Length: 350
Image (cartoon, rainbow, N blue to C red):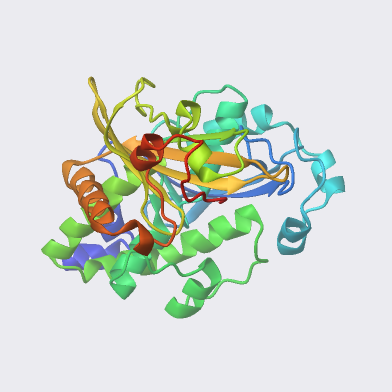
């Protein structure tokens, strides 16, 4: 088996693919934004798609590279322009997102294993597709950055950027940085090193990695919801059902709270809801201040495994055991709603 792995530099990595996989496509996106006035349906607008199709040995057999003429954010953010070098003039000659994504779908085919470096690109792709009311044909990609962190450093949360990983592994590739197709090429060049690191994992570590990747797939398929509110303090937001409703990520029905929203730390609220049809849903929520001074709600909801729901439930139990004076202004929806808005309750501005 080890000899076979040496013959095919991606053999260990292929063991993580779906059995029905036909081909490998590594892709990368560049996107633009308006930090001061974002459109909450599409906070990040894709302006470039780059990809490489790989052969059986990991060799690049084809490339895809397209600039996209933006619909929402015509002006390129200063930071995006500095990092990518992409200008408004270049984008004006690009094609529309629906045209480019149709060609990208054809490039990928029906059963390719998608690979990215990091977890950010896929949610942005999904939200762009949703904005244009197009169904997504893509399954969550394999995050090579996560696999590399786990296999090489023993920590899935050790996130090394693409070019640092090239240096770490001694992978030599002379391409410009931070353009989509070149970053896809760099990721493709790293895959043999990622696969080699996987070969050294024992059965227990491989099983642990499989569990991590399974949760990552559920996170990638989670429902993202953002909405502006009229509230300026978090206590008022936590009294508003439009803000706090936890919807099932599969059917969209309102769930019943098993664990109500509570601040689990660093201003991230967590909750567990029960859908009668699909089981437990895990919610994560941030309340961020918008440019008008009011709070904006950002929610992520995914199906929760039993152990994950139990962990949130235990965190909530410990939260309730902590005296309010020692919670550092951390709030809980259930406690906030017990108190009338006219009564004195420590507010939290967010």
